Length: 86
Image (cartoon, rainbow, N blue to C red; front, side):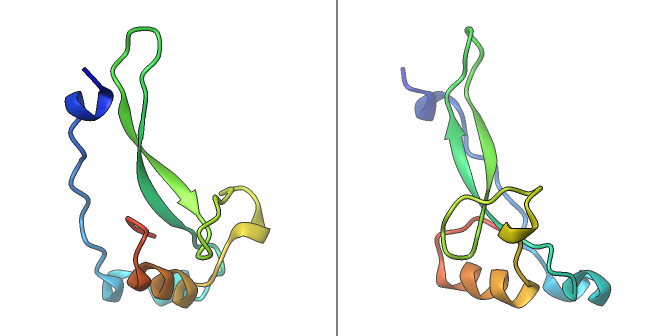
């Protein structure tokens, strides 16, 4: 039995952008993310992980400021599709 058959994808809440404080929206500290199923190891079941991504689709490091984007950039990328959230 594969991991995808045993681990249910969680339901993620829709972000209500109007609830995000303006001070946070003005910071260039945003990344998009994708839900990715990760295989379990040592007999543990798999799990869903939130993989940080840049708006261009490349993986992002949350500790590397060069990978961070503005709020409008991540919103635009999310609206185009391919990401689970930001």
